[in-house]
Image 1 (cartoon, rainbow, N blue to C red):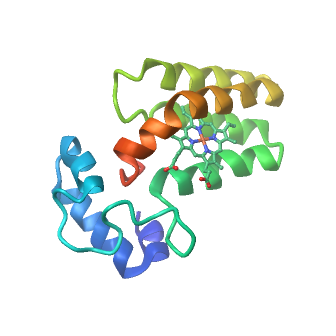
Image 2 (spheres, rainbow, N blue to C red):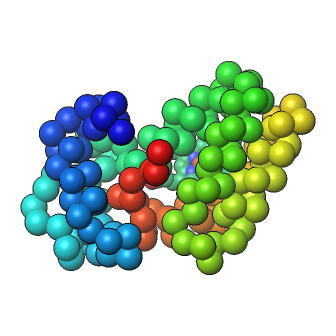
Length: 140
Ligand code: HEC
């Protein structure tokens, strides 16, 4: 956690401090600007050019996309297993099923198969995730 805070600098640390003080159910409000006072990373201030990447966006790049890029099936499997647990809402059943299916494929060395999980989850959940949970910290 400390490592990732350093990366975002003071603004990130402030925002993270905010998140800790806000119950999970209210995080969507933080994104809407309903709860948080003026802090740089509030109101969806991430992910655009010149802004720090959003938490899951950053995590995806470093854990999932990098494993895929280096053709590392074992790391990809681990990353997708972790991704399965990052469901922001237990009602999003196909989130974990897609990620777990991808992890299983990667475990067998089937990287092409694992890629199906990227597509399924991104098509199904990415837009909604961004609307509702973009600022949600990735649990370690
Ligand atoms: C279970 C759901 C799920 C799976 C499986 C998944 N992703 Fe993602 N991914 C997301 C979500 C949600 C976002 C949006 C995060 C954001 O923008 O804040 C995302 C964002 C990303 C990003 C960031 C793109 C950007 O805006 O810079 C990359 C890269 C990425 N995913 C790669 C992958 C790859 C590669 C795979 C498959 C090997 C994969 N993801 C599988 C849910 C998933």
